[in-house]
Structures are given as C-alpha cells and as structure tokens.
Amino acid sequence: MIDCDWYPGYDIIIYIRYRSKLREKIDTKDLVIVDGHNFIFNFFKADKLSSENLMYLRGKLIADLTWYKNQKNCDMVVVFDARNSDNPSRSIQIVDDIKVIYSRKNETADDVIEELAGKETGYRRIFVVTSDYMQQKVIFRKNIYRKSSREFSLEIKDLKNKIREKIDRSKKDSDKVFFSFENRLSGKARKRFLELRKK
Image (cartoon, rainbow, N blue to C red; front, side, top):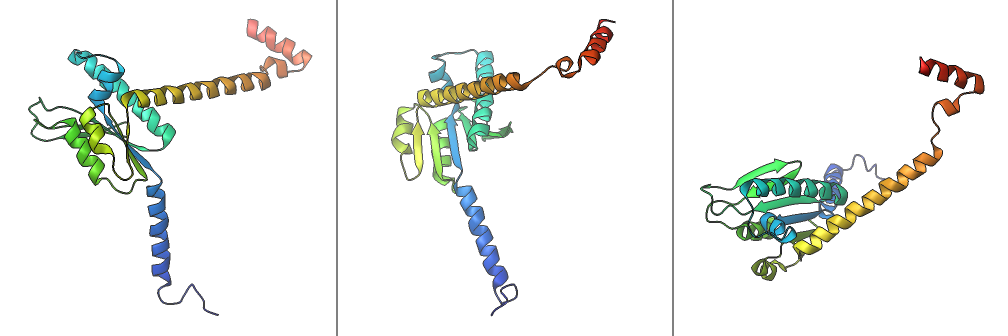
C-alpha cells in the first residue's frame, strides 16, 4: 500500500485540487455592472438634474448597490459617463466595496461597460444594468446578460421589502419571548426594585 502523504507528486496533486476548488468558488460569483447615469435618469425620470442633485443621487445609488451586493454576495461595478469632462484618464475609486468608474474625456459609459463585460473572467455570470438601446444589442454573449433599469430597481425594492418583513417577523417573535427585567423578579424583589427606581 502506498503512503499517499509521501509518494512523488502528491504535493502537486494537492495544489491542483486547491486551485480547482478556488476556481469553483470564484466561478460561483456574479458580477453586476451598472450604467450609473442611465439608471438614475430612468429610475428618477429626470432628463436634467443640477450637479448637486446628481451628486446626491449618485451617492444614493452607490448606497443601494452596497446593500444589494451584501444581500446577493456578488461583485459590483458602477460606471458614470464623464465624456464632457477634461479628465485625460478614467477615474477609478472603491466606495463602500463598490468599484466606481468615471469615463475619460470623449469616452462614453457604454465604451467602458462593453470593455469590462468583454474582459472580466472568472465569474459565473455578468449582468449589465442599462436601458440604453445600443448597449442592449451588444450585451448578449455567453454568460453576459442584460437587466433593464426598471427590472433592476424592482429587484432592489423587492429585496428591501423581504428584509423588512423578515425584521418585522423577528421583532414580533422577540417581543413574544421577551420579559422585562422587573417581571423576572420575585414579588418581594420586584417591589424593592420599583421603590429604588422611584428614588
């Protein structure tokens, strides 16, 4: 009988198995890429917003995406169109574990999204959230799917409602089993406790 802990090549087999398991773990995750301004303008039905309001809505969207990411255990990227800016290169930030990308001068969010969707590997599925007609036509490829802004907003709303219901149920259940401190005391001890509380 071979002592498998010592036969030649055993460490290589273990390493290959480890890499295989690691790959399986990565491949079970989804990546969601959101066309930020497209989502904001479609969801809030606003063609024109002041820069202050737009900044607020960007922050709100990122907060919702952070919450969504934690619920779905997926990776998230949001791309904002900054083609009219003077930025010679893309701006990439990590905000609350969300990758936030602003396109460079004369580059559209669609350009960035198409590039990301094409080059990102190691994900089970890639979802692109947009209601842009041209983007809809180029998205459909193997393991790359499109969600409309409306569909994605309804998904977020549905998830939030389910969490609220779960919290409400949990609160009701805890109220049923919870007894206040004074109710856990014997008659004499409760009387003494109430006297002390009045002082």
